[in-house]
Image (cartoon, rainbow, N blue to C red; front, top):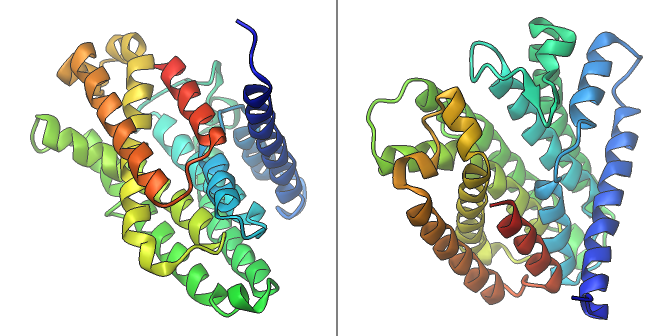
Length: 296
């Protein structure tokens, strides 16, 4: 079947943003100081592929708002946080993965000490790039510049929580040392490890894109449903691999593939409904969702 002109245009838009993300990441590395093994490790981790879903979300949300604000630094920050979390996940003392995206994990290439330091470097760089995004917003038209500091403070606070004991760090703890079984316990792990980082991307795209503060509860809810749908799709794609490794925090293993698919579709529909209410739904979002569906 031949793709329509609109479909080609939507796909091109996603490729445009993905290309922009790669360029912004390459540019960001020039601020990482002199060339060292640590800087090389950061570059290896950042350039090891990936769908760039989180920075894409930042761009797509900001674009849908239609205020013409540049959110490049916030998009890069979202990828910094995500990459930092993956480095830690792969360590032998955590999930013990030797491969990431069909290439050696960072600790296999550079050793565990450098990998750990690289995760610290990227996590803190994420906060720095959110500050840069706030500084950029200060130079926007007055209707946006006067809320730049408030926007930056809110997103920085969200990023702090998402990376801390109530976010990814706590989620990894409960993944390693589960207190109880069942779906509620698994949802807690998924929310803290995955969804909270999506919340940062949604908040960043919304606030640095000029969205209203009073809509933030709905933005958070949309991030929740997208994040859950994303993780379920990821689990369906990794089902056999996770089974071989004995991974317990996989929705498919707990619920079965059919129930997981039903839950995925439910979360996706709730996200779609919320995104439309926020007026951030777009053909580009639809295309991104279709890619997720194919991956599952």
